[in-house]
Amino acid sequence: MKRIATITICLLSALVLRAQNMTDLVISEVMLNNSASIVDDYGNRSPWIEILNTSQGMVNFAGCYFSDDPDNLTKSPILKGDNRTKLAARQTAVFFATGDPSMGTFYLNFELKPGSTLYLTSNDGHTVVDSIFIPTDIPEGMSISKFAVDNKEIEFTDIRAARPTPYSINGRGEQKSKAETIKETDPHGVTLTVVCVSVVFGALFILFIIYNLSGMFFSGKIKLKREKKEGAKGKAKPGAVAQDEIATAIALALNAEFGGETEAAIATALHLYLGDCMHDNESFIITIKPAASGWKNKTNFRKQPR
Image 1 (cartoon, rainbow, N blue to C red):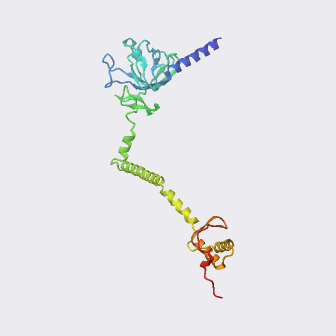
Image 2 (image 1 turned 90 degrees about the horizontal axis):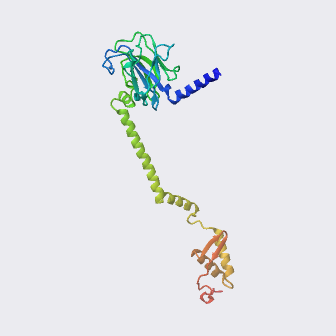
Image 3 (image 1 turned 90 degrees about the vertical axis):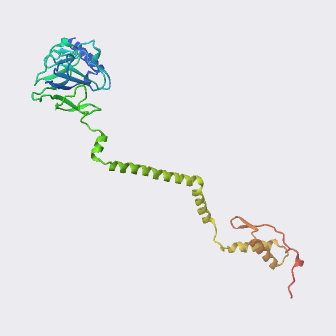
């Protein structure tokens, strides 16, 4: 039963811890010798501790604990009932290690010591949210800080002594923006100008091609060129007269002229063929249109002398 109760308490504590996002809190900066930094609510320059909410939501750290003793993680509790314990996204809060918690919510009951480790414990009393070691060789007027390499993800990979920056994310001022990087690599703006001009002229050239081709398509120029090529393939060469068509025309004319003279029939066939009176609708078939002619009247012919 005791094991089941212990497991149940641990699970509930983990759920509460996750629901309140306590794990998103980080001890971002600690200043031991405060000689020229911020003052507390009473005008004193006391050692101070900065915590940071690295999440995108609000975290209420009321009920959490600070301690410099790993055997007593609940040494200095953070009092409940103060709305200032609700820390917004990417915001910081500063605590003063004066050793007198009666001074307010943000005052600890112990003083910071060089060579010790500072712990931030969740409201369950045993889960260490974050910790930081306070070295003994911190220069005067400097603080021990965690620097965020990536300000979007807030990944702290560097801890070192630096000039104190309370109420701000460490490392943000040291990171260079893209504009600053370009300014250093291209102080006169030559590369940027060339890139911009190339992009503009490239876009104009593409638009010119698109509008030119679309204009030719809608105006019918492309279609007319294709029709001319197709017509050129089917057109016969000038003067190329098929001998079999002439023979067929003569033969049909001879059969159509009953009782006529041979010369008149041949002349009639040639006259009809040269006058475009025949239409080739099918292969090897010639249609002859009847035309008014005086060749049928035999009196118009002059008899040949015998």
